[in-house]
Image 1 (tube, rainbow, N blue to C red):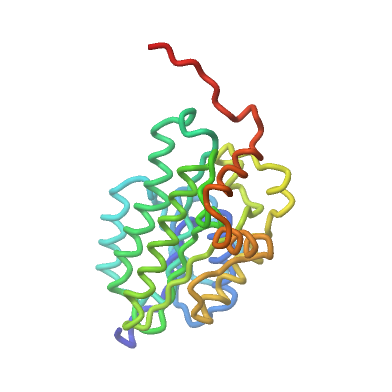
Image 2: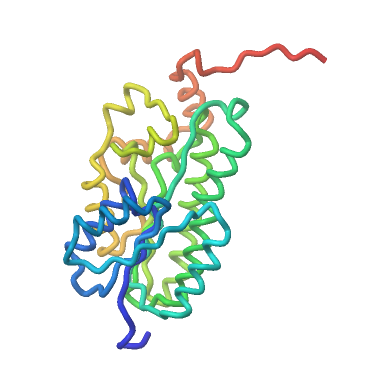
Length: 269
């Protein structure tokens, strides 16, 4: 990696939530970066981020990760600039909850497109521009530890992120690039409202501060950790998921669901 290349960080999902917090914290704590490229659909939110951090040079990439043309555009930009990507944060995510049979097929596929396909595509596009000491933060979720009826496709997509991150970490070890999967529990952001997701009282009790989740994620990435799990509750969930039979835990989760969320239907043949 050439010494004269521009040092950058690239953050997807930078308009809100943990992605925005990570972009802001990098602006405050990584003075060696020449630019931070922030990618999201909402231009006004990216402009507001620039206003909040006037001393930092942001490159605003108004793109939709659900659109395949975005990857062509990003590939062209990276090829033209050839930056040294010190930090890559795949923070974009999409979630809808409810029984699978009640959700629209398009919404289910959108979750896979944004949470899995886009994350993998952006990672692959950035790898040629990363070198020894670079860090990749993949925003997974505590949902990755266990299947979740009522949140089935989202949890499955985050399991994909976790598995991909763990395998990629080993692939990139010889190059000195560290991959950290970030697996928080519910975080107090607009994510749930945007997805029309209703949290149970128990999950609302454990809502985490996104700034604290982001701070721990960056610290764990600097330490070279494979996993960043914020909060005692999620650490316990991870342990429980390893100790107890998965079938028991899935049925327990179903029993905690509001009966109004269950589907009861008569099929006439």
